[in-house]
Every structure is written in structure tokens, then in C-alpha cells.
Length: 401
Image (cartoon, rainbow, N blue to C red; front, side, top):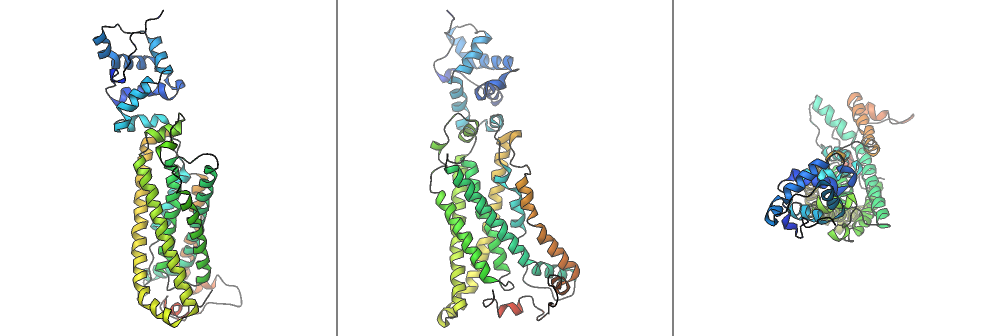
């Protein structure tokens, strides 16, 4: 009968002294196939961890075979490593990469940063005929194309997020880290659209069509917000032995996940409130009720500045938080993490902005009148009616489609 008196009964009897030793043990605890070739190292680490216990009990060192079988067939060491290190967060950067978090480049969406950074626009045109004036005019007259591309990008993000979250809830809740990003990213993509429309509000036409787009985006955001009412980001949903679940349970900062979700909800509510105000103002100006129009003139400017400032701050907060989350996950995910890789979806997202760059370059090169004439077919042509980009549109922006 084999001697099993060396097996400790208490987890405190096993003292793993550093993260390197813990990582060696987890090669076995994660997957039995991963310890092959490391049997000698694993055996040495176990003996070192048990040395004080064996000395106190005056026991001899056990042979390698029973030690390796004990580790593979027992949850004892799992609890030792987890309680001693993971609960304190001491060895996450060493051990979490061994869990091989797969990541998802479409969930972090590197290309999301591009439209957010490019959303700052100019309304005032330099008076002198200079390179700066030429550039600003090109930016102003490509605003419509830019805004249309922003709408397409944001609506596509909202639809993709809603479909992804809804499909996951049909079978099992999404992984918390990925799920929180699936809520934050589409909401964050709406802020640049709002900023662009606010900054160019005195120049843009076809306002009724954009109102309908904002109503559609508000409906999509409301549906996504409804899915956040289910507590899929709590720890009770991530218990289990699967690799992804173990990574979430041990390596993911659930406080950061919860903060990401609540931040996303706050952004969503802010945008929904702004959309309601925008639609109400549009209705007031459309029907031209004297009392309401007078009231609108008094509050429109403060509301404009409030929306612009809050949107700008919110946009950069979203960028900062997304970068922060991505850096944390890339460190803990290891080489197997694909969050920072380019995918087919990433390339398609970048391709959305190609027409904007082409339009900007064409207007800059040909000047506005010639470039805008190029959009039309005979017998129509563009006529300059004001030296100020926003001057003519101020008198008609609420009465055109």
C-alpha cells in the first residue's frame, strides 16, 4: 500500500513563495497537456513548497510520480495558488497569460478611435486667401459626407452590438469583459456624430432626414440599454472550469468591468436625453409656434454649448477608458490575446472613412465651387451666394429636407 502520509490536509501547509513557482504549477492545473516537458520543474517546485511541512512532520521527500498524479487529480493545489495569489492580485501579470485569453479585435475596435479623434471641426473661415483658409473650407464642405459616414458607422456599431448581445442571451450570458465593451463601444461611437452635427449645425441641410436617423439610433440604444438590466456581469455568471470563464474569474478586474458598464449606461442615457431635446427643438422650429420659437431663441445657445462641452468631454473620457481597458487586457491576456490585431471587420470599419478623405482632398484641390460642381450633372451647377459658409444656411436650415 503506497505511503500517502506526505499529502497535507491544509492549504496553509503548502507555501508557494513567488509568482514563478505559481506559474509552473498552473501549467498542470490549467491543462494536463501543457505540463509535458516540465515534469522536473513541477516536481522541484512542489517539493520546495512542501519543504517546511515535510520537515515539521519529519517526512521524507515523496517520489515524482505520486506527486504529479496528486497535482493533476486534486483541486488542492488549485485552491492554494488561487487563495494565496489571485485573491491579492500579486501574480496576475505572470499567470494570467498562461490561461490564453483569446480576445476579440472587433470588440476592442481599434478603428473606433479614428472617427472619435477626427470629430473636431471648424465653423469660422479665415479671411485671407491662405492655405489655412483652403483647408478649413475643404473641411467645412466635406462635413456632410463626414457626418453621413459617421451615421453609417455608428448605426452599424449599434446594430452589431445589439445582434451580438441578443444572440448570446439566447444561449448563455456574454463574458463580462467582452459584454461591457459591446455596450460601451457603440455608445461611444455616437458622441462624435453628435459633436459633428453640433459644430456644423449652422451649415448642414437635410435636417429632417437626420432627425429620423437620430430617432433610429435612439431606438437601438434603448434596446441595448434594456439588455444591461440583466446581471450578466456579476461573479455568479462566470463560475466554471472553462478557460474563458477561469480567465474572467481570476484575471479580470470585475470592478473595472462594472465601472465600464455603468459608464456606458451613463453615456447612453446622456445621448438619449440629448436626442429627445434635439427632436423637440426640431418640432418647435418646424411648426413655428411664436411662443415656443421665442423660448427656443433664449435657450438654444446655452443648450448648444452645454451639449458641445459634455459631448467633447465624454468622447475623450471614452477614448481614455477604452485605451486603459485595452492595455490592461493586453498585458494579462498574453500572446494569445487578439484584441490588438487587425481583423476583417477592422478593415471594413476603416474603409468607411475612405470617401470622407477623398471628398476632403478633392474639395481642397479643386476649391469648393469647382469640386461641388463635380457632384452635379448637366444642366445644374453650384452658385456662390455668401462668403460665409454658414451665412446662407442660417436663414433656411429648418425649412429644407
